[in-house]
Image 1 (cartoon, rainbow over the protein chains, first blue to last red):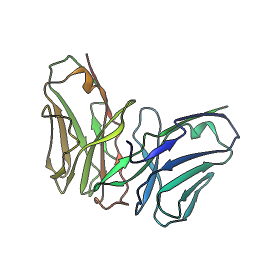
Image 2: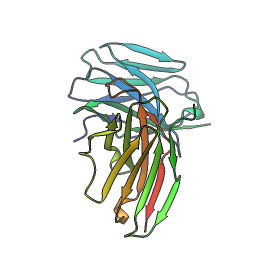
Image 3: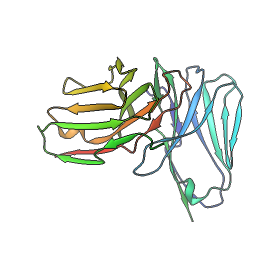
Length: 109
Length: 115
C-alpha cells in the first residue's frame, strides 16, 4: 500500500484545457512537496506546502494543502505542451521522504 | 551552481558484473540520498547519508547493494553482482538537511541496463 496515492495515473489533454491532479493519504503530514520530472531528467521541486488549507500559486499552477494536512491537489490552468511531465508528490514517512507513484501528464498542441 | 552530478548517464552491463554509480552532491549540502526509479515501483529510497554518515539503509534491496560516502563531495552506489532485475534509473539527490521540508535536488540519473 502506497503512503501517498496519486490520481489519475495518466492524463492526456489538449493545449488550453484545465486539469487537476490529486495526492491523497490517510496520514497527516507536517508538509508536502510537489515535483515535476521531465524525460531523461531528475525530479525538480515545484513547491512545498506546510499549513493546512494553504494555497500557493506558481504562474498557472495552483497548489492546495488539505485542511487536515492529509491530501493535496495541483490545478493547472490553460495547460501548455511545456507542462508535459511526471508530477510527483512527496511527504515525510518514517523519517524519510516518500514519493507517490506520480501522474503522467501529456499536453497535446 | 552545477547541481548534482551523476555518472555515468547510461550503463549497460552483463549479469554478474560489478556496477559502480557515482554522485557529486551540491557543495554545502549535508544530506545525500540514493533513489531507484522503475515503472512498477516508482521512486524508492535506497539509502541516505547525513554529514557523510549512513543514516538509513533499510531501502537497500539486498547485500549485493552497497553505498559509501568517503567525503562531503562524493558518493558511490555499487551493485555486485548485478542482476537483470536491477535495471532501473538510479538517482542521487542532495539537500541542505534532512528536515522534512528541506527540498531535494536531484541529478539527472544513471540509466542501468543489466542483460
